[in-house]
Image (cartoon, rainbow, N blue to C red):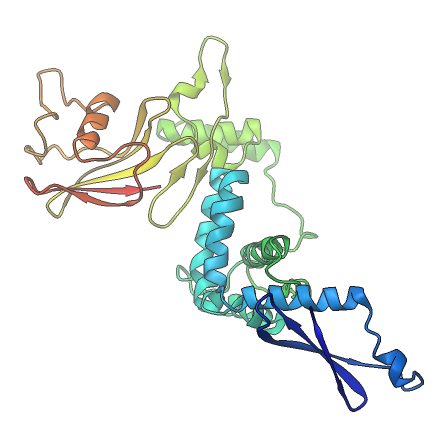
Length: 342
């Protein structure tokens, strides 16, 4: 039950928990000077309840840092509702966000803190690849990510306000492409000339750019295509996955994990594996110069054996299954190291 104490021309309202422990959080209510002290002392019950709820939320927010709250959001909401490609993009936003506000408690993060973080993203040197500011779209993604975490905290009754609501994304970012700019599109003659020049290019470039021009698919959809998606009898192609670029590796929709196999310090192979459909997608072909990586990988007359069955057995012998977590798996009896990424 909240405790009310008269203080000159105002009243201080403190909340007491079930153990009669005085919570530090308090609220001062200044009454109208035209009211009598007797009437001013009659606290509105709804106001007392609001004070108690406010103090309870504040106590929880005092113990949770933004990074911890964000990881809870990933586990309890994002992983259950977002697509793989969206999740990967959000994970890519974590690094800069955690460095800026990850160490701060939820209740101490203000609108100004978020605004300064967003402004910093629009400065030169933030982009590690070219030294330029981040693009307008990427800056907005950072703000949306932070806002989503705060909105989830509000729904969980941890905080009462989202400090991102009043944050403004800088408009004068060099990498931004204004919407009113006219798009550069090939004319029919230019497209015809491009296809003529493309006829001499390797097959993968011919397939990619031809599909790009005639289907209007997104880049990620085309980069996620595999040969099995093409039906040559019906002359159709099925878009069933997307590919999202990451500086470390590429996550393909539908794949369970990314595997890197090392023999000592040498890379043997890199591949994607899908345990549900029992398929693998080789990103880096096996190194034939490494002869003794495992007895299960043999060199018969027909060529090198490297398929889902042999890979899955090879991984299972090292304790790696579809449910394995990210990490480095090693064996004491050999020099093989397997890196698992999800």
